[in-house]
Image 1: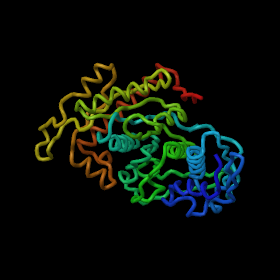
Image 2: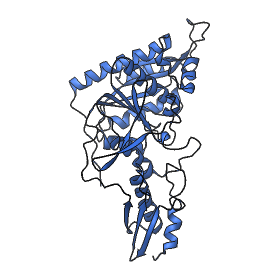
Image 3: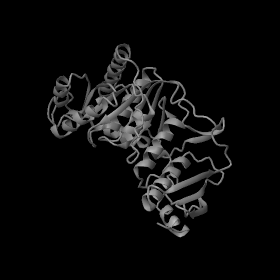
Image 4: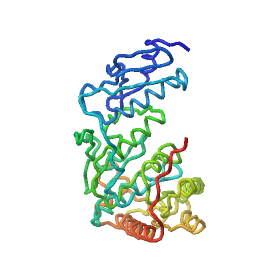
Length: 364
């Protein structure tokens, strides 16, 4: 199949740069396009800027071109900038003692709320904590941390670009939402999304941390597989509501992490929205989504139930206002405090009984 420079440009028009939401052709990033003999080559010009997403964009371009013109197509993309290219790859997260995946079988169970408040509770106990918003398509951590308008700095270090995580409430954190305008929709294929996650992991200066939490998207996806391939995950925490439809997906989530090809220990379950307690009747409990669903499932699967978090208006208000409820000393905050205590205990038990998790090897 023969193709022209014009056809290549039409394909590249479909690739958006995450920082602006505009396509790379209108941004004049695609230079010196050469076609012929089943090959395409061009320069991806960052204009001399420090662009932490250049590699993700290049991978997305290659994927799109091969999808349009055939897998046998030869693609040569040179990232052109004033920055020297890396000469060696640094170790993955060398200063991180424990990496924790916060997952859920389905959406809408409050996984990100649990992840943010757990991070706050751990930090209040004196631990060095980081949080990665790995929900690439639906990032909510910036708003919950009161940092929707923050933009991480990028600096050159030893010939490579390094992303400096934002820091608030004693927590270092990064999210794709910090690089994209809030009103922009991320219409990305899998390779670009997973490439963005890799950069949040590998190109960020996380320093020394006791815990690095990963707020994963719901379900099981390429993002989950990319995480276990890039990082030796210490353990996973599964968040659910007590209702049957959510619990059915918990089983799938546990099965994914404990699959023999992945072998990430599941540290326990968290039952969110366990009951509703009105502020004016603090002793009353109304089990809107059913009672003890996670507790029974945890016992059946021989997993710890790490916490039962009630439905409380203050939790929702804290997430919306960017002031997580775990920051105060309320009864509700105590629920997340207990979760942090139990997580620390389970991680300690896991590290004493089991060998370190290995990264999942890439399969050809």
